[in-house]
Length: 339
Image (cartoon, rainbow, N blue to C red; front, side):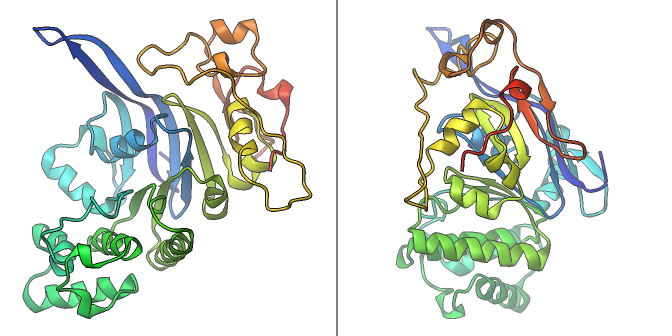
C-alpha cells in the first residue's frame, strides 16, 4: 500500500442471504456490493454516486464494518503509520481503528437519541473512550459545539428543539469528538434545504482544511459532487463502472451509464441545449444480475460481446492520468463532454 493512500479497498463484497421456508433455508442472496476495488488518498474528498439501490450506503458501511463484509479487504493506515485490514481486525483493535473512522448519517432526525441532550450526545464518545471527564469533558464539549457554529447555551436542549441543519451540526460535532482521520458522509446533506446544504458543505470543507480530514462523500446530487469532490466513483448494481478526477469525469465521460447520469443534471445556461439520455428498461435485480456486463440490458451501445463477457476494469486515461472504466468499448466510444 502506497504511503499517500489512507485507505485501500480490494475486491470487497457484501451479500445479504435470502432465507425461506419452514427451515429458513438459504435460497439466494442479494449482491449489494460485488467485487469493488479503489483507493482513497490522504486529505482528498472522494465522491460516490449512482442510482438508489446500487450499493453506495452498503459500501460505505462495509468499509467501516458497520455491516460485516462477505469477503475482501479494507486496508487502513492508522495514525501511527501502520496498515491494518479492517475486515480482519479483532474487537479490541477495531475499537481503536474506529476512533479514526467515523460516519455522518443521512437523516439528522433519526440519528440522534431524542432522550439525550446535546451535551450527552456530543460527550458520549469522549466518555466511552475515556478521553475526558469532569470539567475537562465540559470544556471539550463546548469547543466541539462552537466548532460547528452552535452556541454553548444549547448544550442542555434536546434534539427536537433544533432544525434539520442544526441537528446535522450536532452529528458532525459528535463525529469530531474522537479526532477522526477518515469520515464517510452518507448523504449528509440530502435531507436539508438547499441553503442549509451550502452551509453544511462549507463547514465540512473548513473542518477538512483545519484537521486534514479525508472524506468519502456519498450523494445523488451530481452538481454538488462536482463542486466538492476531487475524484468521483460511479456505481451500478453493486459494481464500480467508472473512477476519474472530478473535472475529467464530467468533461471526458467514458462509460454509457455515467453519460446517462450526467445528461439528467439540469443546465445552468438556458441557451445550451440539453439532450437527456433515457435509459430503457428497469434496473436488474441484484439477486439475479444479468450475464456479461451488468449494464448491457439498458445500454444504447450494446453489442453481442457485452451480453457474454464481463468487461475488465482498466485504466483508459492518458499518460500519467487515472481514469478507470468497466466497458468493452470505452476506447472506441472515446471521451464525451456531457456537462
